[in-house]
Image (cartoon, rainbow, N blue to C red; front, top):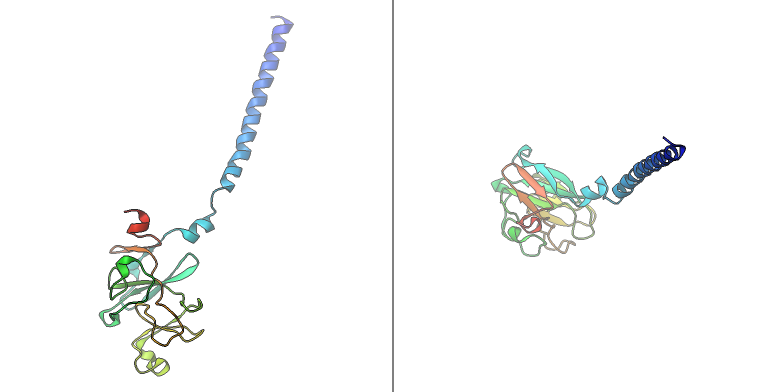
Length: 187
């Protein structure tokens, strides 16, 4: 083997080694760069649907779930908690009924007052002394005095202009998915 052939092999090996190292460095830089363009877990959670096991909520109980940075109330209503009539509302088509819900047994609504965005507090029917003789239970906003029934309907004379908002949701026997319904899921 001549000196010229040795030089060519060394040069070729050097080119191959340099190319391999350069490719590895390129991949090492590209992966974090590409990953930085993906939404963070926090960003995904802010708009992503949220699943909740409703089998843990007993009749008459209220559960609070966070969705898009807002509290969402899930009430497992009893027959005594149901009250018809619902006109001024922001709600999906399947909740445009006297119960403001897909299933009368379950109420799902955003826990944000439609007046100025405070979070109302649950006041049971036993709070008549504080809330008035006609109080059958519901929500009271301590910021400006708005009152809502257990279906999120605003009481007349309250500063809140509309009923509490019903977010999109799907409901099965044991699971609630907030932020996704048949229309938004494409089904």
